[in-house]
Image (cartoon, rainbow, N blue to C red; front, side, top):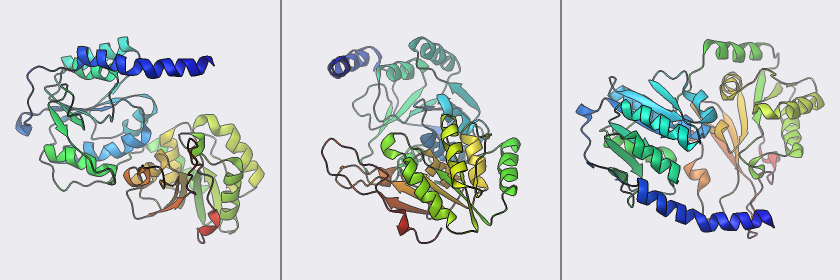
Length: 361
């Protein structure tokens, strides 16, 4: 009862907080909707949502800007684990760690303001009050947003309504503002020598001809393989004696998958030293096939140019186009869709698919 009351209160209060936030922060002095790349020395990309997959896709922009304008300094605002994706990226000059705390966000914005960025690019689909505050206080010479026509905070707005096109097309439109046409829309992942050695030595320890890497975990329980589905997929892979299987996983799932690997037997291998997304990247790089739910591992596999089977929940009946917009941008990926769900108020379950339709691994 209390949680329901709290949700109702939050739903009531949210638009009021937003209206107050817009009154305070949705403003900008000296707006300019023309970009002169001859005067641009610094560009700041905001990726403070903490989403790993989004950051992987964003790497195309860092590379394409550097290719066209090698002298421009690129800064990226990150949060949480998505920092790992670009820590070794040579196209990123400076990384700023963002915290949820308003006090710390103000402190970071002041630091950024003192560094005089020419362009700030924000990819948020919606803006909360803290994000408005942060963008305002960064004081970049020009702010660029997508579908932000109603916001005064942005000098330049890109009206983008192609809801059935891949997300990279949206990023290509941003690059065109900087006179970068026909951009390469592939992604980048850079491993350290230690990470390379981890992946290579793990693969060399496995005698089987083919190593299949399975990621069972998505962002919610509805996008996560359950125990029965994990075992079904693994046993299908292991039907062929030439195949071995391993897992990539977030650290909190280590114990669960270690137990499953032991249950599956001698051709199921478990890398105990995986600590984060880049260790997973090292394992994927030296695997022969990746099987994954709809999550950041899809984009990581695309960046590594891997053969992949990706399982998505069906968009049918939802009015959404997630598998088109955020799907794998590669012809080396085969997509399997779970059964659609038409029950109002109930989310589709990614486990409702038959792995038997995959005849060859």
